Length: 297
Image 1 (tube, rainbow, N blue to C red):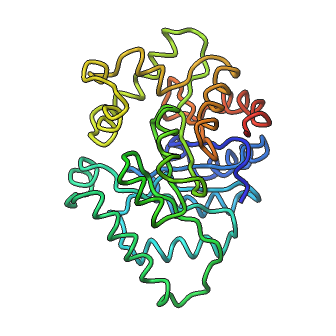
Image 2 (cartoon, rainbow, N blue to C red):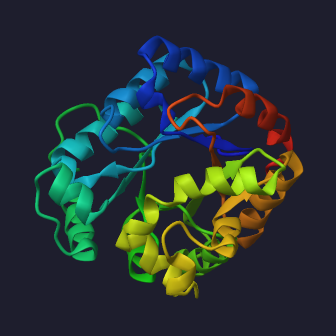
């Protein structure tokens, strides 16, 4: 699996028709990006979209960052993982996670339980299906867990191939690597704003950050990193914004990528933020493609 260089994390595909999504994935591959990460909220079903992306491309790794484990039973998740891995060897990463109480209770009408034990039981149930699975099995299926806190990172180290972290500074990447150990995959998402003007960049960054500061999983992780309630209030302090979201020119973005890598990340996927959160940041992706040859450790 080719996870050199730089990856793309995007939620903007949900707002584009399928033909545009396929064409864009092909362009991202041609630009030299080596992975493409999609999430799950109230948009396209991620396994279906992953299939569309894999079929449209030839080399790029497609990953779910992440699939909500509450949305499907363990056998369905296991079977989907096996199906795509067998069909597209060394090109699919199943990232799964516990999501957030608000998204599970209010959006899905389900009941959010204790996240760590739920994840532990879910992974064990997935593993139990390996001996009973009746279709053609897949070799080298890669499964990683969305993990922020130390206990979830420990679970990722014990029962998956690694961890996917989101909305974290390089300081968290260093802590995550210590917990995961040297041999587990660590993929860090990094939000970026390609703008030199401080006020413009921070305004775009805050509009992105605001939605996450209402979710306890992210807020608690930031408190563990030493941020105070005042810094976490509303849309965050300048220090918090600058720590979580890299902004500036291509060189500034590359410096942040290297900080994650030096802290222990195996791979970094950038999420490009723009004024129109539904629009594809094509011009920014094209500009940032110039740094992909330099984005490997």
